[in-house]
Length: 175
Ligand SMILES: CC(C)(COP(=O)(O)OP(=O)(O)OC[C@H]1O[C@@H](n2cnc3c(N)ncnc32)[C@H](O)[C@@H]1OP(=O)(O)O)[C@@H](O)C(=O)NCCC(=O)NCCS
Image (cartoon, rainbow, N blue to C red; front, side, top):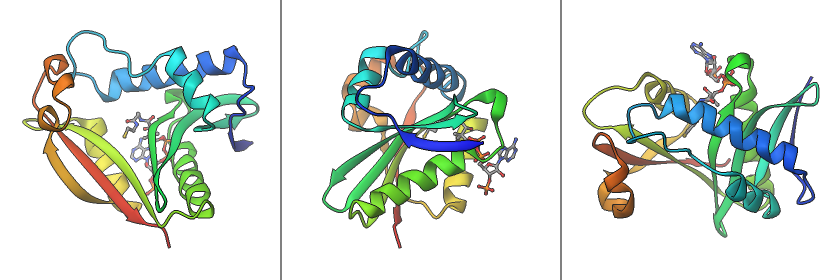
């Protein structure tokens, strides 16, 4: 059975370590070729801070963490989700879609009227995982509202890039 819940601030180190490992595992694949060296997407300390802020939701399959997402509030009317990850061994079961639906529902209930997400894509070649995400987010109703050179938006990240990348912001109205 699939259940989605926000981790309580009292969550233990085992679940924090599991979320950290899952995010780093899936991003190592989905951002392959974008960064120089083996750049982890996140760390136990960062995930622990997000958990304390009530920002991490997990998908549990029979009690086991099978996916996660970070949900934030950007301002009074805008929610954002990021660090979306589903266990590669359980892909295609609806875990990713249910996590996005959960992020949208909880943001709407908190008074948000718009949802936002960010996507990094290589500019000169097509990355299959990014192509999948772009098409999927489009099917979910997200539209690109901002496209820029990552090196311009985040100059401090430029030296770590292995290839020129565009930074995209997608938005969707929450009905
Ligand atoms: C994005 C991600 C979370 C999706 O997780 P998932 O649980 O496999 O996704 P779902 O089962 O909910 O399927 C999502 C959609 O993809 C489709 N899909 C799933 N697996 C597929 C496959 N092998 N081939 C084609 N389509 C597939 C589903 O039909 C579904 O489409 P729909 O919502 O229009 O019906 C997962 O691929 C992932 O962890 N990716 C790496 C991390 C990442 O890139 N995160 C986002 C950064 S912005």
